[in-house]
Amino acid sequence: MVNAPEPYVGDTTRSPVVAFAIGSIACALVSVGILIFYVPHPASLAWASGFSGGSAALLLAAMVSLLRRRPFAWRQFFIVARWVFLLTMVYTGMLEYVIVYDGARGKPLIIMTIVLLLTAIDIPILWAFSVARHERIPG
Amino acid sequence: MARAAKAESGPLVPLWGLAIAGAVIVVLIVTIARNWFWGIDFFHVVGGALWFSIDMFMGFVIGPILARLDVPARIAVTRRLMPKMLIIMPTVVICTLTAAWQLTQQLGLFNLPYPQHWWLVAAFIVVGFMAIIAYGVLEPANILVLLELRKPEPNGVLIGRTMRRFIYGAAVIGLLQVAVIIIMTRIATW
Image 1 (cartoon, one colour):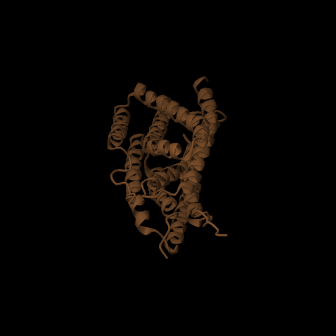
Image 2: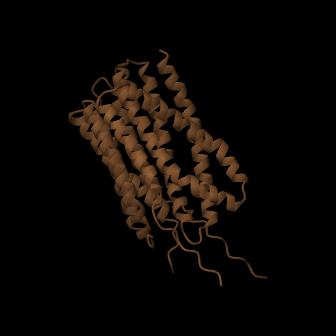
Image 3: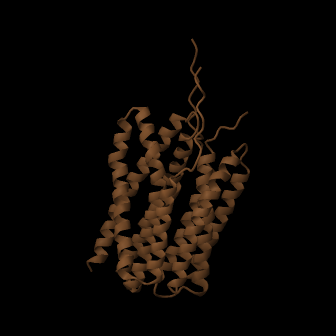
């Protein structure tokens, strides 16, 4: 009796890259949420900055986890990442324009700009990794 | 002798679709720059309606239909549907949310005192969850399916698994949209 090979269902392992990237996006959203929570009064920049810092740390953790992944379909990763990065930079530019147009200045503007930039890097990493992780590497 | 299937080449999404999406974004920016209240309201209302309708339709109509199709039909539908979804959904979402921010500013809703301000906070929390599902589940699944379908021998099992995740994610977002509609109608009828 010959057993048919199991079909390849992709990478079904739980990945720290995905967890860190989504965690980074979540922290970025909380950081902005804190600023919104306090409007029109001055926001607690300590908490907003803290969550922005957390977002940056989680993004760094996602990058480290990604770099440690071997073997990995880097070609597929960068094919997807560069186009998604272009898209996120267009959106980031638009949102930055809207924020500045609305009169944001000083530290809240800096925090929101940092959050936008972090998200603009998180999303390409997340999407490109989600695609490339399922590529079968020869050998 | 059968010829080996070739990988598809060319753009992943229709270029005319990208041009339309780009034009919509430009019109939105001009609308905001000119501080055109009706235009901003139009973007928010139409964008929100489209977002809600598409998510509900994908999750509760298209999804069950796809599940009942045989595999070749399912692939044929998915091959045509997903490139358009990849253009439509990010454009609709960014327009809706950007217009929402501007509308909130123009209507002075950010200056509302508590407890009414909690409704804005609630809207942000719900939209935050929707953004995480969209960025973490829907869009990666969309791209993965598109790229897999272009291969000479697409992995049907992987595509099926990913499409199920996409449809369930769209359905969850559709349900969160109901919460958004409750909040929006509450704010609009103060």
